[in-house]
Length: 226
Image (cartoon, rainbow, N blue to C red; front, top):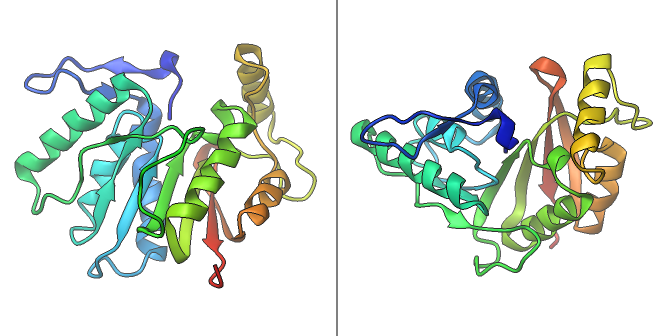
């Protein structure tokens, strides 16, 4: 998810609803590299739900490398839903298979009609730091409901340190301050704070992957006895 200040409308025919962010474009391949190394082989069918798909740049990029997987994008903003569909329409022109469903309108603060235990993975990028903590709680609550046993919730973005929640380096501190100036409920969350929320919904943090620009991927596993 990007803030509105980051969004560019491409005005590309025949897909005029496509939106673009440079951040999503630059980080989509490094994130994909982690997914390719850690999701079960791309030759095995899996189902992947993306929460807060934003422009749609990530999901069509990932889908091309997992042709047997089923991808379900979502967002709660109409302009993003239109952009996601535009990216899907463009992707399907040359795609080997049509493996990306039309986007769903999902708000993590509201109930959903998605069937219980219907997805193997949930992917969520750059949502936690630009929303109130209640949205993070809603994300884990949703993941608890719709992920299969031992399913994975994969979150990407900037976070406070895992030991004491400190925000480093200075660029992340400035970013955190800027976010809080926009909305006092926004800002980087400490990993230990997230672990408390995750544990209350039966998730365990299995891996932390350091990424470029002081971001991380947090790989959460739904405990297998639930």
